[in-house]
Image (cartoon, rainbow, N blue to C red; front, side, top):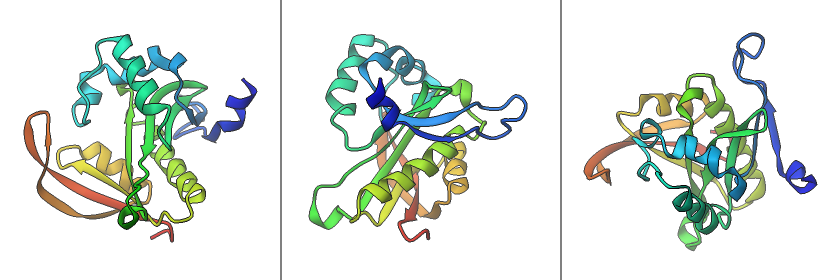
Amino acid sequence: MEEQEQQTTHISGGRGSGGGGSGNISLRPLQLSDVDDFMAWAGDPDVARFCRFEPYTSCDDALDYIARTVLPHPYFQAICLDGRPVGQVSVTRNEARMEACRGELGYALASGYWGRGIATEAVRTAVVEVFGERPGLERVEAVVDVENKASQRVLEKAGFTREGVLRRYQVLKGRTRDVVVFSRLSTGE
């Protein structure tokens, strides 16, 4: 338990924490023991709509994903509200020398917590952490479906710059989709 405490990054009380607020927001590594909380967002079709994954329907599949993908990942954190995981945030590490200067941001939040500023605070904190942990990292980018206006707003509020639209960029859920590219540089630009 002590090790987990040391790895937890406390963020804030979230938007409107005075009355009806979000509570205490923090980031910490997602663990196998978080599988039930993970299922709350990863099993929700509304959350998975713009994600690369299909909604999880099995705890065994979720445990396998956490064990094989999340635990060895260089930066994959649970977004916690009052200590309980309500979402996830990750930044990839590119091993290819030509791409080592950038990482791709991904995040998901349980739909019951949308609209409270939680994702924005988690993204802000994650970006500061990865820039601090990886000296060669100069750019964090996010690729967002053009229809996912809420996620675009999260990135804008978190200080990302909208760079433009990539047309017919990726296949998502069987359809070729346009995406908006956002970035934040280590210099704060």
